[in-house]
Length: 368
Image (cartoon, rainbow, N blue to C red; front, side):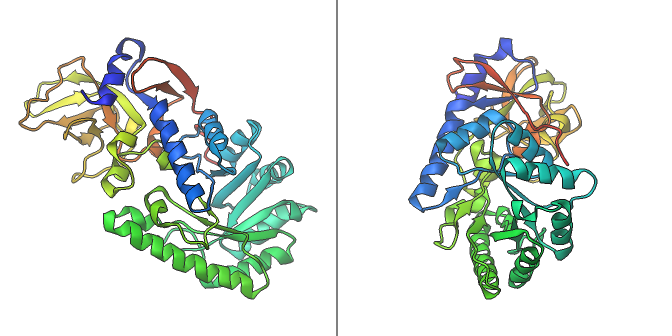
């Protein structure tokens, strides 16, 4: 019997579906493994909390040796700062409009706060938001390494750092995101090489204006294996804490390292080659495609061929696997991050299903 199904079978009478189930022993192994990898390569770990949005998991990451955390927005940073986290990198080119400027200033008073920038206008706005104390805020210049998301061209990183310094902010380094490494197994190493080239150029650009890059920050989970250059000072993996089908497909994790699945119940079975589960986009998000499905049942080759808001269409092959109505099955999501934000709490057990805890998703709903 698949280990996820074995753990789930012990919880069936105590958990309403759909529910996110976390295997705490597997999760802790993932945390410790990443920390060991980083220590081996003389890297700091600054995990991205957007994956779990859970204070308890963040604490475990820091206790394992993480130097601080990465947040995706001001709200996430506030939640974790209120819980005692005092070293936060907001790895996003924030535009400090509305209340964000005041909130960033308050965060910088109680934490060592670093904020990403990729344009001069944001540098000016952040300096204005800090009032008479711009030196409280550290900035890290984001550069693009081929993902074509946010990020300035690497060769202008120095110009942005110099603009920040002139306004009294403290430029401390550069970061990038090799998101194009998720397009396939062969893409992981190529994206890491692109990342290395971009960071090298950016560091030189900073040096050219007299700014030392104390921080050279890399990500993400799919490319970490190849992000071991002595130039890099820290890594920002997020998904590694749970893993998912996408990372398994890419070769960035094994099936045994999957620590989160969604418990789902078969609710209808009228169609010969499918059954309907009580998981849809409201539980899993919309990550997927016709080719790879929208999630899969652990221990089988069966995938969700389609999902509606509350329905998961589990396509069945000609094999013996056909769960009956009322059966609870473990669904492994393609991409774990959009799953967590759909639930108020995580149901936490171990691989044997011998314990049961509930951890709040503390930063759920904090998007600004």
